[in-house]
Image 1 (tube, rainbow, N blue to C red):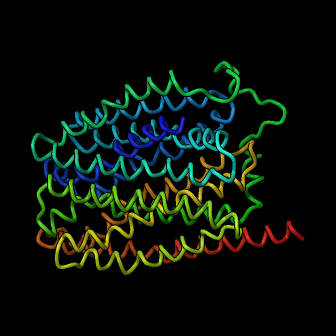
Image 2: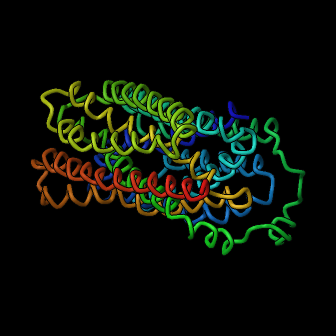
Image 3: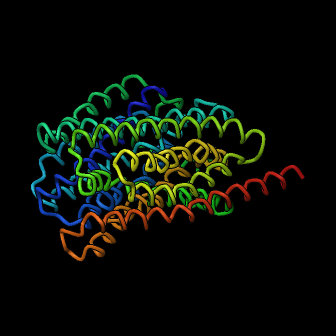
Length: 415
């Protein structure tokens, strides 16, 4: 089960992140602004990715989760291929919305399955393994996308990125079994005794401040990480004059190494520290995000691309390091009835604010600084990225407060 879900989430981020490496050639081909790139990579994707996550989670708490994931991966793969056929900004925006629709149905049922297959003391490590597929997918998107755009075209890159998901959707449908008895789709929307509704989920979670601090922290992680990563390709092409194949290889290698290390380290620390001290891992998470601020500044002001990538790897490490401890704690804070819903609410908020507006913020600030002058686009983008990195101080605050609330609740329970 975990192996198949690993491949699914890997393709999820491959299809999502391939846009980052292709953004600059798309901009040049279609004559777009940085703000339009931000809208295309952020808001277009997150609009349905986030709003559909809650009803999908409700369905996942009632129906066959494996079938939901299989349908999801097929939908987003087809829509990724549709991006390759887009002829203008509007068509690309709509195709990216379709990718978001498909991907909205993946994380809530997947994390709910993992929570049932693995006991609490092993859950952070399992989610860490699951999360480590994210940078691997981003690595493949960067390396493959860069090579394809330099040797063929950005359109071909989208077609090749989307095609494998159709096969993986079939594998998911046929091989992964849900632990619940089969129920017919027409019965999925009937409320049964003891089953949580939307109101029940919000009512339960409303009284848990630690959950909302984790949501706020995760939202800011997405705002910074997705905002900056949407312009990785543009940064290194404009500022350092990289070719797309070299860019894809170096960005992909950085994301792959730093991202996997972050996921594994976060999952390991979550299992090790949280069993000794309530939410002890969140202290380390908060500290790591404080390091992101100076490292982001040095990344965009480095003398060479290689030095820049070293500093930028800290952001990549941090953006996966938090994953295992955070989602393991969310699953522990939520009761079994609302586990999938707790993830969906997290995705709803972090998706709209973080994934949706992070790239838009970077693009808008970049356009504002450049004032429409092409000669200033490189400096404008570096300034926008450095400003965005400063939000990581706010991120650290919320993870620190979540730890305090969890420790307080644990102390009260023991008393």
